[in-house]
Image (cartoon, rainbow, N blue to C red; front, side):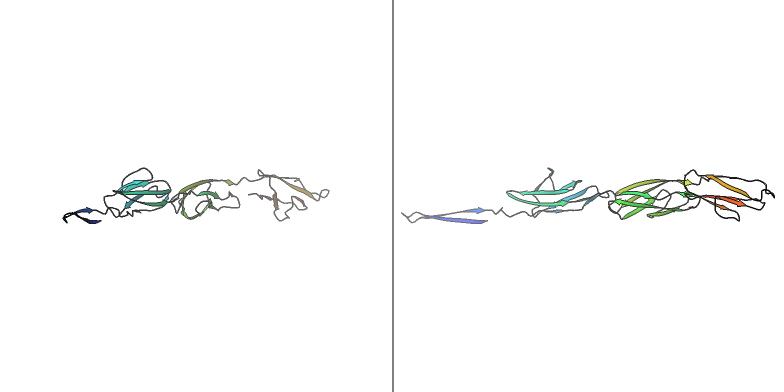
Length: 239
């Protein structure tokens, strides 16, 4: 901008006149800047964006259609703002990303039985962010807990991005004892000096059974030659 002058001379009489005009410079560029960039997550559902420019009286229009120097966004994407002051225009853009992946967890455990009085339950992360905190319905605060009682156990995981996942498991106790009886008992005599004792047992699980006789071998069938009380212990190998 500036002041521009012109002088006009009449060539016939040599008289001159001068005129001037003030030209204002309104062609500088705007350089808007978007402030407040943060990524979205389960902890942060929205982000406030604001814009600043070299000219405080500029007007702003966002790519969302909103106007003004501030907007709140709740979706990932690229946001563009156009600043206008007079005939001058400037733009700026900012990309907001989203990290709201929810983990998926399952509880890995087992069952209590006559042989196992304690088991460990593990909250296993099968997808999503693997780091985070764990809270069990039993009060535990670690990824692995040890339990002794039957029941339903729930766990909630909170990942580092604030997303939560839950899982549950029902822990049972298999303490059904096998049913057993001894066949072949009787009276030893000179004509009948031996007796065959057979332990017959059934298991609810249908698994293999182990036999252990008092003072005898571990076979299901025993031959005895002495009078007395014979006891057999039967173990269900499944529990």
